[in-house]
Length: 82
Image (cartoon, rainbow, N blue to C red; front, side):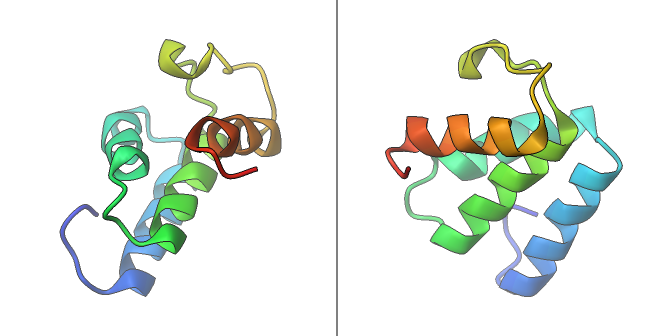
């Protein structure tokens, strides 16, 4: 997920991880979001996946009870992209 150069494959992988609510994917997804050298669309795919996982990660204010859209909005705001 972090090293493949095929953006559609990376996006599909993140979408799948979000759909299965993979808690193990939370840390790698956060790393993708934080890496400003990563393609913007890939970073947004990671945001959507985290939103689907509903991870209660405290770095993002403990947003585990919100909907996927609310989570994605909070992360985008923290990234400076409203």
